[in-house]
Length: 217
Image (tube, rainbow, N blue to C red; front, side, top):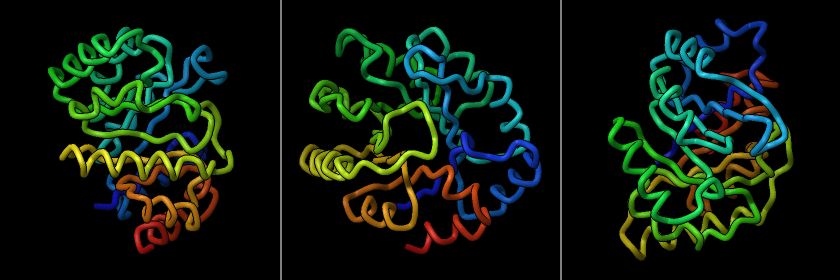
């Protein structure tokens, strides 16, 4: 499986309608939506109202990445605004039991559930919940800002997750976000990635052409 998920963090909002129409007609079937609170990461981005606007303009899967200190407090706002999937950070929870409760809660709301962590966080800290989630996001940059360079250490994490998936017969998707272009996407796909998140690479060029390029790798 290969899914292209353009990250609207890098979208030119002066031509929002035209760009969303290009996305709707492209091979990208997901839209990746980063939420930052200025605390968990040192940046501020979008709230639920903007997500609601994307929901009105597109039938694509809205893939919401919560880079916020209290995902439990705010998840419902984004689900009500149209999120199809919610990805949260393992660092926001004190125990595996808390993570399990949150995963169960999100599933009760009929959304896909993803888990992720900052690059330096040990994946073993949330290995116990991997059988419960639908997606695991590997951050190949420090979360908080677009346009960063790909950290090749992410490839080892992808390989590990792919190995666990096969060994334990789990069915989560593996997603990568950060510094994705044609070259790094190819490396990530070879390592076992299913979902490519790309922002600057897609939106700083011809949107359709760049999506096609990632699709055809």
